[in-house]
Length: 165
Length: 152
Image 1 (cartoon, helix red, strand yellow):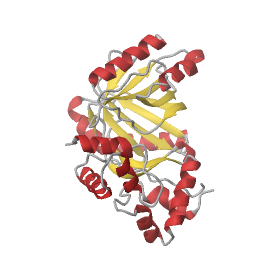
Image 2 (cartoon, rainbow over the protein chains, first blue to last red):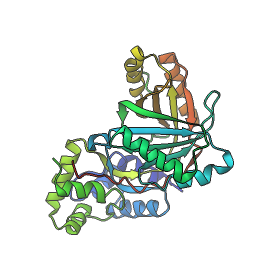
Image 3 (tube, rainbow over the protein chains, first blue to last red):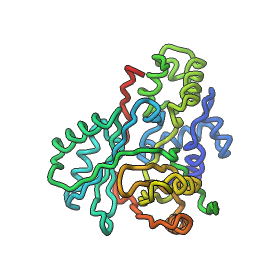
């Protein structure tokens, strides 16, 4: 589990590791923690799976991956773990979540595919549908268009001020 | 123009970025360049907006609560409504998608109450109903994304 110091550390480091010779020392200065403790805590959080990965977070669009589709399926609840696990194994899939169905929105399984263009994404989707046995389930494909905002997760402090703007 | 070093940094350090006192030096040693080369290459990647940052990917709902939200907004008003929503510090992704539900954004809040307050405020401010889609389960093991940079 995360203790208060882990949270403080993650709040600072998620804004980005400084590009300098001793970046963990810099992060430590921000949260009043020795460099070695910063490194030890990050190492432990990664081992515990509370950090999924630590590294470069790329901007797909700027690197030529212009097409992004969110695909939503309505699959039986008892199959969702198995299907979600299978979908997640494809290298072109960049997210795979279960979300609750809503009135007039019957979908419960969400995945994201990034590709260089729409045709490639649709081809990869066909491949996914074949391999995972998804062809019988209702789905919708939502390609992204304009990106209004994209940044890393910013986790607010426990007592945040709400924006009034 | 991406150099070989840029491409190596983009593809080989999405996971397992060194957790050591001199991580950029460790990368430099592994790639046979100098620490200064690695630092300037990362500065260039940041400057060209090819990377968002170097940092941890944290599984959803371990710190705070997050939800995907969908809205249906008339095309003429989409930019203005999107701008209002993007102005919230709790909103971290905000995209137009080609669908009747054409605006999709992610809110991250400190707890359920805070999340509800942000949604209520957005609904009041925009006067469009928001469909709230919290995450129930995360199947994805994030190993980074293999980029084909041959033509980049």
